[in-house]
Length: 77
Image (cartoon, rainbow, N blue to C red; front, side, top):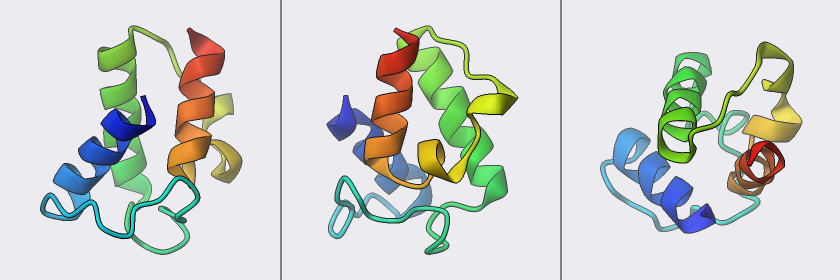
C-alpha cells in the first residue's frame, strides 16, 4: 500500500521521481504536496481503496508523510 501511494505522489507531484520519497519524508511541510495536492491524494486514496476520508482526518499527522497516509487508509479499511 505504501508503495502504491509513493508511486502516486511521485507521478502526480514529482514527474515520476520516487527517489527521496521515504515513508517519513515530509510531503506537505517540505512543499512536495500543497493544500490542493492533499485533495488530489485524498481523492486517489478514496477511489483506490474504496474508503471515505473526512475533514477531521485531514491533519499533518495523517497527511504529511507516506506512513501517515498509509496508516490513515489502514484505519479506514
